[in-house]
Every structure is written in structure tokens, then in C-alpha cells.
Image (cartoon, rainbow, N blue to C red):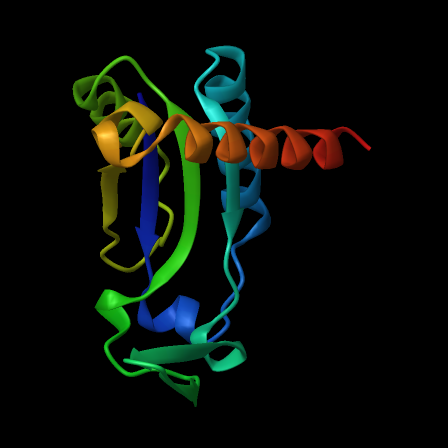
Amino acid sequence: MRFMIILKATKNSEAGVLPSEKLLAEMTKYNEELTKAGVLLAGEGLQASSKGARVKFSGEKRTVTDGPFTETKELVAGFWLWKCKSLQEAIGWVKRCPNPMPGEEAEIEIRQVFEAEDFGAELTPELRAQEDRLRAQVEKRKGS
């Protein structure tokens, strides 16, 4: 099973406050543990929403709104993509995480990623083959 681990934004992360050297060292050590355990697939921190945009879909219409966005607690400051045997294993790893927002209350959300088999018959053999080709192209680019 794959899980998206979502670090929620805080006032400091939205203000562009960067992590300290101590926190960067703690997170690097934590990411090394995840890597050695075969859990970590990807992970990145995100810039503040002031450097982003949102695109709203309404039928065929697209409306772009530039950041920053208000509801800080609803924003994402970073993410990991993990491979775990269960939700309980993912929870266990999150509990071991250093506090990502020292001096503030931090929240990390765990969401299971859909796998091809979760889509049932709607994901036809043709669509599955196309998806597999696209994933192979992405993996090839990562290697170059």
C-alpha cells in the first residue's frame, strides 16, 4: 500500500520561515531511517501559497486565483510518499517524525493512494496498459 503523508501548513510556513539547521538535520536523519526501511518513495517541502495558484473548474470554465490563500490549516507545507504494509505502520512512522513545526502546533495527515486494482472494471486493460507506459516513462526520466 502507498500512503501520502501530508504536512499541514502553519502561520510560520506560510510566512516563509525556513527550518533551522537542527530541524533539517533531524529530518534528514528521519528520512534516512525511512529510506533504509524501504518506506520512503518521495518527499518534498513546498513553498508558501503566496508563490502558488489555484485553478477552479466549473464545467468548461477555468478560473485562476493567485496565492496567498487564507485558510492556513487547509494548506499543505510538504509531503512524503511512503510504501507501508498498513495504515497502522504509516501511523507508527508519523509518530516517530520530529516535530516539523517547532514552536507551533503541527498536523500530519495520512491518506492511502489509489492503486490500479481499486478502480475495478472501469480501468480497462487498454487504460491500464497506457497507465503502465506512462509510469515507465516517468521512471525512465528519474533515472536520467
